[in-house]
Image 1 (cartoon, protein in one colour):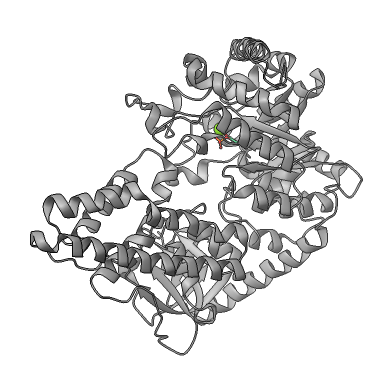
Image 2 (cartoon, protein in one colour):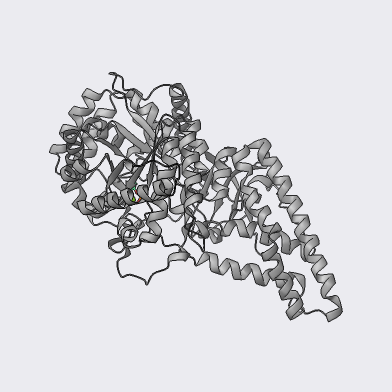
Length: 601
Ligand code: PEP
Ligand code: MG
């Protein structure tokens, strides 16, 4: 039974905070139903613009503060909000509401933003849902200004100690606005690790837990809590022992951070001299800088869904080419592996809505959608061919289940190259095509797929999901979702061997590669290229430098003999304990990294 004193959320910014709770209810201010006389309409429009201008000034100030405290990329987060406040169409619609319905400025602004909020929060687009907190970040202060309330948040510290601030939605503004000395940590009901506020909390080094769904009503101002931004938990009214234990874990986490420092700027090379190519996955453009900062040797998986999600139109060929070229240039001298749209499942853009499916993850998705709709795929292929002359750009196909999917794509690439040539465009006449191995069918056909591919990349998130018939997003099944299941390991071995036999590079780009025990297993199985999320790059680099590959090979051989996940875990842990303190690894599980089982004790 779960402990009622423990709130479980998602750790989005590591670190431990112990202190009193401060709940900030950033609810929308109450707006009275007020209509205005026709003669007052112009005055209301003026009031609207005055409030928008005041909040814009606040946002500009926050942007400046963020620039000083966090950095340029982080400061850009406020650009989206400033742009909204400058958006003529949006403001024009609010004005129309005032004019046509004689609404007060606050009523009209509330009406319009609530409408947008409803639309965004029900959107199938993950990106748009993520931006709801950004919208709230302007909605609350503009309305507050209009009704004469303060637009800035302040803390009245309950006990003279830095507080742990809880709120329903943590906006980027609130994250930056509060004085650093007053805030020990953040917790919120909404949000995930890619929310803008989460990115800011990480940059500012403030521990943060999001997704505390059963959260706020159990918290009271002044209540003592422990917030663990690594493991995503909040412990209410902790005992003295719990505080001590939490401090101990935090000590290990800091030791690990210190250890990781020693690997900065060093090659990802094992103790016995085996080189590993360590690349980064990139889901959003803002992650590029982090990947570069951590010295990633290229991009092992560029997810392109962000290009279409949250928009009402599809991106043009030139828009895509420009972005792909930018990434290619940024990672000059290293591979940049761009995955074609992995649409479907839960990811369908507004521009391309389809009828609901009974089993979307077994449905019309990824390469199936692209091949069925050349009008979507063709511009992406042409964009890739345009970018290819600027770097080592490659095309990777998701959810392959049959070799003809690769053959059909190749035909499309050949045709697109011919078209571009006849149009006199500066573009490559071919591009290496690789296959993701993320279905059992692909793993079983790895030899044949390898013969037709320039490279293979194992998507262990989906490979685990489809092999074990365990929904990767189902929290109830989290304990059963493990790439350390012997069936998954047998398939991994099969794929790595097939890649080697065909002499094509085989990498792993699923989350598995970020888990230290799994990473050493992958090395032991013969994998020499991994791609992990940007924050995991330093951990994996450090880990690789501790590993003795001959030992990892012995452990992998043991894991391949195992009949149960527990046996696999035991073999891997025994090996890894030879060179690293397991406490460090338990403390160091990165937020957002799904591990096979809880790493903690
Ligand atoms: C995977 O399935 O392991 C993978 C890398 O792809 P995604 O997580 O985008 O489905
Ligand atoms: Mg996948």
